[in-house]
Image 1 (cartoon, rainbow, N blue to C red):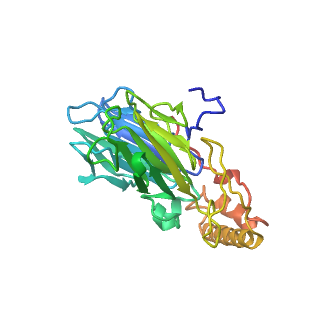
Image 2 (image 1 turned 180 degrees about the horizontal axis):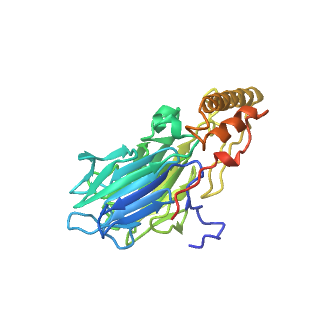
Image 3 (image 1 turned 120 degrees about the vertical axis):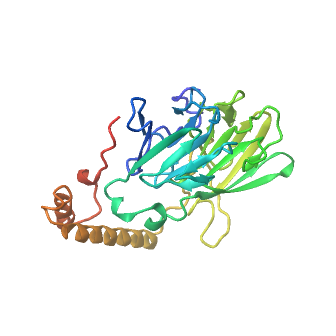
Length: 323
């Protein structure tokens, strides 16, 4: 599939500037130490040579687990492995990671470092920043399959495959046990093929292995010989305020566009809330002394002096971890 083909589903290949940055280290403090700075939304860890992070060990599965950066939080998803994935000595299925966590994948301890952008670093975990449940999808999503079968997806990461423990189990000999993921990234939903033999496609177009491809309402997913239809409703999209349906046309493979513009009173309220939040941030930063927080003090002064706090300040942009 060509990345320049307009009929191909769009791919999410890089993180947004506002997303947290993740550093993964194995063999810490030894000559075998390796470090990865993750700049992609979804990173697959496993024994497959094509994995984003390849680990060895008889108890490491081909695709063992996934690190998913939702744009506000970093999640760990065990791909229903026999040996499991441990976070700080506890078995996890799906969980939010914190800076300093230690995973154990097979025999390998994996250290996690997470750095938040400056304008989010004081606000804690995703659920404490008013972003809702970080372990839930940002949209309502339903998959319609053969014979009228449907699946309502709620979690931020779900596995499709033939394994008895996956969230979306398919009865298809051409589908792998762990075939693909459906994840929520920011306000979008993506499909990730896990490097399977038969691959995955959206609207008849094959997608690259281990790269998130954006899904839109009405898209058709093909895994093996199984066809699924995507039905999703986004906040403020596809449903009127009174609950009555409204048209939400979308080009195949493209994100939904909002068919109704923001009403004036809604926009004014959102802008006022944003101004208040930025002013509070400026007041908190002004309280820092130049001696104790020399890097933050110029930013505080800039925020305090800003006549219109809604602006793009270069000082507030996050400098990503160097590769």
